[in-house]
Amino acid sequence: MKSELIKSIGYDQQTNHMEVEYRDDGKIFVYFGVPFSTFKALVRADSSKIKSAGAEWIRLRHQYKHKEA
Image (cartoon, rainbow, N blue to C red; front, side):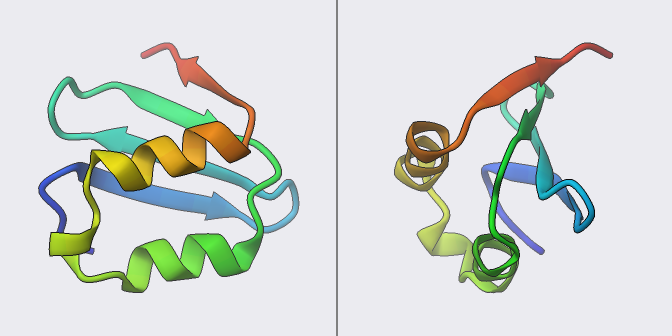
């Protein structure tokens, strides 16, 4: 995945947790209860369409927490 917003992304199918590392501040967030289809759509998305609005959409629909380094 190439994105100006997201540095790396991962998914655990057993727990439906998605982990996202953001480029701007290097913070890592874990999102809970994310459907696999949402993860796949994010991975396949055109990088120009992955903006802060997309990240906000995920934050509004799924519980999340900041993962300490």
